[in-house]
Image (cartoon, rainbow, N blue to C red; front, side, top):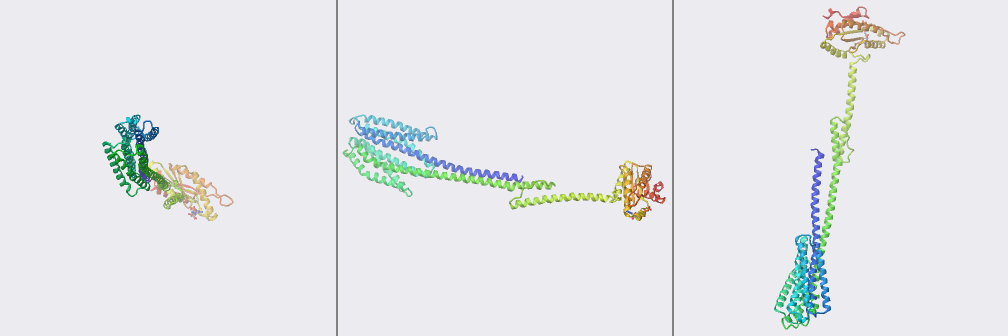
Length: 581
Ligand SMILES: Nc1nc2c(ncn2[C@@H]2O[C@H](COP(=O)(O)OP(=O)(O)OP(=O)(O)O)[C@@H](O)[C@H]2O)c(=O)[nH]1
C-alpha cells in the first residue's frame, strides 16, 4: 500500500472517529437540552393543572355560599358566575396545553381526563343550580350535601393529570422532583382545607349540629390535613430550601395552622354541640378562605422555584450544547487544517519527490520537484533529490561528452592525421573482415602495395612540408581511383596499401597501373616555381594466385613492390605465383 493511500485511510479513519465522537457528545447534549425543555413544559402543565384544580376548589366557596344563602341574592349569583368563569378559563388553558391527539398514550389520557373533569363539573354545577333555585326552606340537607360533594368530586379527576405532569418534569430533570412533589402536596393541602370548609357548609347553612356523616368526614379531612402538614414539614424543614420557600411555609404555618386553629375549634365545638355557630357559610368563608389561600402562595412559590430551576437547567444545557458545538466545530476545523497541512506540506511534496527519484532511477531527469519546503526535514529531502537530479544531469552531460570524445579518439586512432586515410591498424582490422567474407562467399581480392619513389630526396631537397604535400596528393589520387567497397590506407611513412574486392589479378593490375599514372600526373604545390610531381612503385598480389591470407598477400605485394623499385621505380609488378610458396 502506498504511503499516500495509507495516510488517506488513516485520515478517513480519524475523521470518522472524530465525527462519531462529536456526534455522540452533541447527541447527548441535544437530548439533555430536549429533556430540560420537556421539564419546562411539564412544570408549566403542572402549574396549569394545579391552578385548574384550585379554581374548581375555589368555585366551591361561592357555590357553598349560594347553597347556604337566599335564592335570589344577586351578589351570591355574581360571585358564583365569576368563579365559574375563572374555572372555565383555567380548564381551557390546561386543555390547550395538552395536545389531544399527539404524544404518548398517558398524555392523550390526561387530555381525556381534563375533558371528563369538565363534564363532571358541568353536571355538579347543574346540581348546585337546581338546589339554589329553590327557597332555603325547600333545600333538603341531603340535597345540599350531595351538591357540595358533587363539586368536591370533580377535583380528584385532575389528579392523574397533575401526577403525569409532575412525573414528566421529574423524569426530564430529577432535581425538580422534591419541588414539584411539594407543589402537589400544597395543592392537595389546599384541596383538603377547602374540603374541610365545605364539610361545614351544610351545618352552617342550617345552623344545626353536624350529622354523624359530617363529623366523620371532618375527622377524616382533618387527619389528612395533619398528615399533609407533617409530610410537608419534613421536606420543607430540611436545609437547602430557598429562602422564598421557607418564608412561604412559615406564612402558612402562622396564618393557617396557628391563626385558624381557634376558629376551627370554635366551629367544630358548635357543630358537635348545640349548632350555634355565630356565623353563616359566607361569614366563615370570609375569615377562613384568605388564610387558607396562603397555601396557594406557598404552591406558587414552589412552582416558580421549579420553573426557575428548569429554566436554569435549560440555559445550562443550551450553553453546554453551544460550547460542545463550537468545540466540535473547532476540533473538526483543526483536524481538517492539520490534514490539509500534512497533505500539502508533506504528502504531496513527498509523492512528487518520490516520482522524481523514480524517474531519476530510470535516467529521466525532467520530472518536476516541489518548490522548496519550509519544513526542515522535507527541505532536506527535496534538496537532496534536487542535488541528485542536478548531479545526474551533469553526469549524463559528461557521459555524452566522454562518448563523443571516445568516438573521436577511436576515429583518430584509426585515421592517419595527415592524409585522413585509415591507418595501418584500421586497415588490418578491416582487411581481415573483407578476407573472411571473401573466403566465405568465394570472391577474389587483390592487394596493392604502393611506395612513393625517392621520397627521402624530396624531403631533403624541398623540405619536410613538401613531403607532406606529396603524401596528401598521393592519398587523394588513391582515394579517387578506388571503387565502392575497396579499402585504402596509409600503411606507414610513404607507403600506401589498397585492397580491391571482387577483383582478379588482371583487373588488379589494370587498376594499379591507372593509379600509378594518376599519381605521376598529379602535381602539388611546394612553394617552388613549377608544381612538383612524384611517382610510385606498386606491387600487386591476388588471392586467386596466393590465397586469401592477409599476411601472405601483404608479403607478396611488398616483395613485388620491392622488385618494382629495383626495376627502376615508377612501375607495377605482379607477384610471381612461385613466390606464393
Ligand atoms: N615529409 C615526410 N616524410 C616522411 C614521412 N614519413 C616518412 N618520411 C620520410 O620518408 C623517407 C623514406 O625514405 P626511404 O625509406 O629511404 O625511401 P626513398 O627515399 O623513397 O627511396 P626509395 O623508396 O628507394 O625510392 C624518410 O626520409 C622518412 O623520413 C612523412 O610523414 N612526411
